[in-house]
Every structure is written in C-alpha cells, then in structure tokens.
Image (cartoon, rainbow, N blue to C red; front, side, top):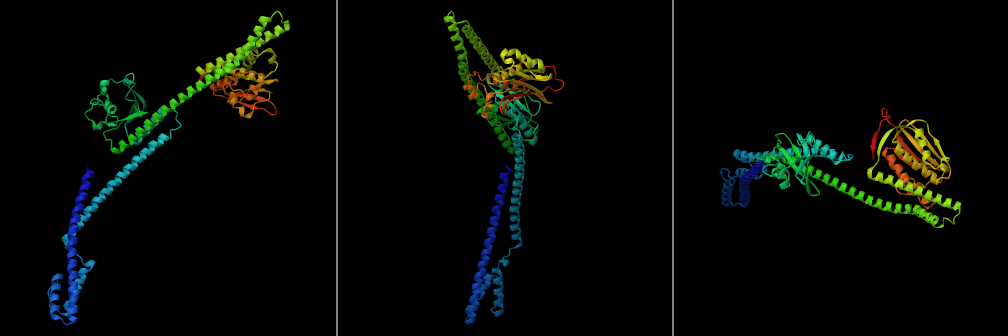
Length: 541
C-alpha cells in the first residue's frame, strides 16, 4: 500500500513538472521565434539602407523593435547596432532566462522528483539488504543441511536444520510433527529444537479439525501454509494447544500429506520474505522425506530380490549337495540289502564305511545349512568374554577324525583371548576342515597376540586359490573353479559362516597364498578393554 502511494506521488510530481516545463518551453519558444523574426527584419533594414530605401527601412525597424520588445528609437546606425546586439543575445542559449518565480517553481518540482526517486532508491537498497540478509540465512541453513550428509538418519539431519533455522531466523522454537490419519487421527513429534509442546503421540478427534477451531484443520483443509496472525479469532493450533505467533506449513511425502513444519516466535510478524524462505525449507524437508521413503522401499525391494535369489541358490545348491551323499547311501544300502549274502566280508565293510562316511558328510552339510539359516534369519548375538586359548583350541581335536589329527600342528601361548568362544570355535572348525579337505600335507594353527588384537591363522600346504578368487571364497555357496572340478565335495558355506562370525565380533578375515606353496586364512579380532574381563558383553549382527 505504501508503495502504491509513493508511485502516485511520483506520477503527480512528474505531471506537474511536465506541465510547468511545457509552459516554460512554450514561452521560450515564442521568445526565440520573436527574436528570430526581429533578426530577419533587422537584416532587411540593413539591406534597405544600403539601397537607400529609407522609408521602407524605417517601417521595418519599427516592426523589429515591437517584436524584440526594445524601446522605440529612431533609425540610426547606432540604434540599429544596439537592436542587433539585443536580438543576438536573446537567441543565445545563455540568454534564455526565466523570472525568479518561474525558476523557483521549476527547481522545486525538479527537486521533488529527485527526492522521490532518492527515497525509492533508498527503499530498493533496504530491500536488497533484506534480501541479502535472507540469502545469508538461507545459505547458512543450506550449509547446515548439506554439511550433515554423513548423518545416516533423516531425523538427525532435520533436527540439525531446525536448530539452524531457529538460530538464523531468531525463532523461539520449531518442530516437525508427523500426522497419521489411519486408523485414527494422531500427531507425533519427529524432531524438535527444544522440549516438545507435544509430550507424546496424541489422538486428535475429528471435531478438533474444524478450521474455525484449529489452525491445524485449516492447513489440512486448504493444503497451504497458515499463520496465526491471519486468524486471530481461531482457538489455537488445536483446541487447548495455543502458541503465540505460530506458523504451520504442510509437509508431503509422495504428494500425500505427511505432517507439519511448526515454528513460533515472539510478537514480531511473519514478513513475506520470511514466508518465502520457510516455504522453500518446507519443500526441501518434504523432498528429503520422500527421498528417504523411496530409499527404504528400494532397499526393501533389494532385500526381497536378494532373499529370492538366495532361496533359489539355496535350493539349487542344497539339491545338488544332498543328492550326492543320499545317492551313495541309497545305492550302497540297496546293494547290501539285495546282495548281502553274496558279498565278501571286506566288501561289506567297505560299503558300510562308505555309508557312514557319506552320512557324516550329510550331517556336516545339514549342520552348516542350519547354521547359515539361523544366521540369516536371527543374526549373531555375540556374548564376548575372556577365555584361555590352549584348552579352547585343543578342544578342536575332539571334532577331527583320528586320521586327520596327526596332520594338525598347533602354536599357541597359554594366554587369555577375547570373544564368544562358542561361535569362534565354530569358525575355527570350518577353517581347519577347509584346509584339511584341500591339502594332503600338514595344517598349522597359529595364534598370536598384539596390544590391540589377537590373530588366529590356519595355514596349509595346498595349491592355493587364484588371486581373483581370494575375496569371493567368503561368499555364500561360492567354490573356486578348481575346487568345484575336484573330487572334494563341499557346500561353499564354511568360509562364509566364518566371515559372518568374524564380522559380528567387529573383526576382519582374509585369505592369501603363500610362496612357493601354501594357503592361509587369518582372522584378526579385538582384545577386551581393561576392566571387561570375565563379564559377558554383547555385539549384535
């Protein structure tokens, strides 16, 4: 409104200046025109004098004096020269003078116009300063936003941004409310700059959403930002929840109303510049919420795809791995049943030994499948504690068949290790059985300690693994081409179980070939901090 009156004043001043200027210009034009005609007449007077036409010269001289406004004189050479001087002076731009009153009016109007334009320039400068200030605020808020990209949860980012908005815009507080309309209307707080005005999730009766009673209902109905200063007669954000000078902006997720951006301050108003900035921030928060939801859906879809792929791989691998021992057990069992009397004693023993061996292989496969299934569904809950290494590692020998025990060499000090001994024992068994399977020579178990960790290594003297397969051997069901084509059967689960157990301990596992011949799988685990020995502490995978 002020701007409208300002431009009205500018227009009026310009109109007056143009009228006055037009009058003055007309007066100047007439003065110049009379002086010009006087000059023409005086020139003809000179010509008539030269040709001795005195009567005509006198008539023209009188007419020239009347046009130029000079006092009437008789025609003489001196008077003619004076008249020419006066006319030339009036034709000169420096001779176009105005009366004092006219000059005052002209200068006054000109100064008025200049003053009005100066005031307008001052207003524009002030607006530019305000815009620069708002831009600085927005940049600070955006910096806070982009500076928190390392935060993994959108709620943490939004809380940081709320704090920055409160600081830069000098607000009393700000919150993000989530709105749920199914199965019943309810409000809950996602983020807040201070103790929330909502203590917990609160149900909202439908009658409380009447726009005449609650600003919240007006936002839901009109789907636009609402400011309490526009509706002084409304009972509050909700009946019974009144906040001074509050701003409510809707937040959306995938074009559906998700919640509200709630801000409040003291008695100062919400200027349109502030409203523009808040609208941009609300849009950005809505974009973040939508992006987070899409990421969650994408991860969920990816998990479902991985589960479907894993299920297919599991069925394929289990079918293959179960078929071999079951086929052998069935074949040798049927042979014994049908030809028992015709078989020699040593043949019967060989058949029975094969059945027992394949049964053990089948049992081991089923154990690994059950272990992996449990890990996939429930994860690993580690109960870490200190335990003596030598009794723990020598218990391995009871799990190894007698003919393989002589191939195992153990190097371990009688020290205290840290971890879940049951899960780590399962990892050790899988590492040792893997080495025994692919190496006909000795297998060495080495345990060493450092200040911050302890390392368990299982080394064999086999042919090793291709370099490009060193990382892949820890994948579920993966067997290197050489192992898959050999006569040694396996499920490809042993080392993947080892990796899952080590990851749950926040350790690391790796494999490497040894020159000139050999292969080693190593596990590095953290040691217990001082004061933790003997007590169980859990890590959840």
